[in-house]
Length: 205
Image (cartoon, rainbow, N blue to C red; front, side):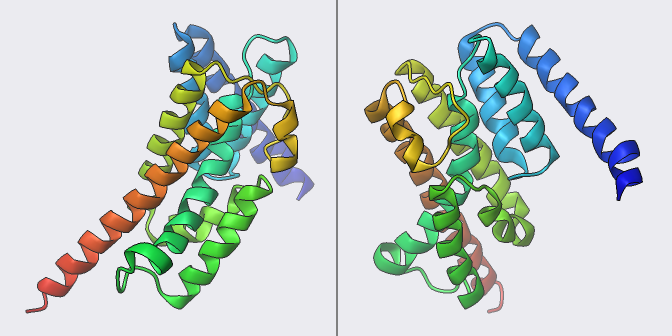
């Protein structure tokens, strides 16, 4: 394990850090940086790209160059959005055959993990339907990051959990940005999965 870490994981992680840092440093405009950070964080839900984005954002926040707002939104919108999709479908949309019992249970776990700042709750959905889950996570996180930037929300500490809310500069607009991103992911998941389920059903006849 030590050799794997030394010769594979550390070089890959350092390479991703350098790529992200160079990409961000060469980007002109606050919104572009916010989008890059949010999408990189949301991309693999706790994987190496996510961790590289966190490391770069921490470095930027340490010298007050750029807040951690986009990173935090990108970390929690995927699990919250996917969990919300399951909840909304059960109680409001009630679309049939888009989530089996296992994914419904995983949806509640995903939502809870998002509340406590853990991205990995969304992974079962990404593994089963990556072409649906990952793009929606990226776009939802980017939308929220842009809104938070417009509203001048600033988070300087790496605390994505709800108990970090008192440290947020602009809590109400942060919650609005978060809600918009979560609802985009949730409703997008429901509508696309329902469309594909209906298409699959109709192709049988």
